[in-house]
Image (cartoon, rainbow, N blue to C red; front, top):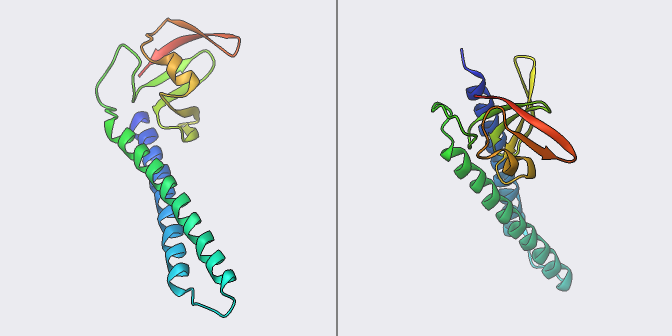
Length: 150
């Protein structure tokens, strides 16, 4: 049976792969539309349509690069090495909630317990890094205690 960290990590991998697949399909559809666009007598209308498709393709390319960065972040995560100091790949249980420091992929429920997958460059992720069990920090006017680190 998988442990909680593995389940959370697997969720993040699926999140990234799903996003990657959607973007790649979108790029393929845009490319297909560009290839099938034929020169019509409308002239300007044709050129405007092609320009719009090329802009969409560029935007999808930027999104693809962002997803590749998420994949790189996931590749850096070591979920099997214990740590006494909060770092990428840790599960952090606090008085406010439970966090998995990885990528920002939202709310996850494992074994009826709620976790939030967050990146280390998010406001709360930055506050958590380097802390240890028992430490306190302030976030949005709340004093939060770190209760456990996995």
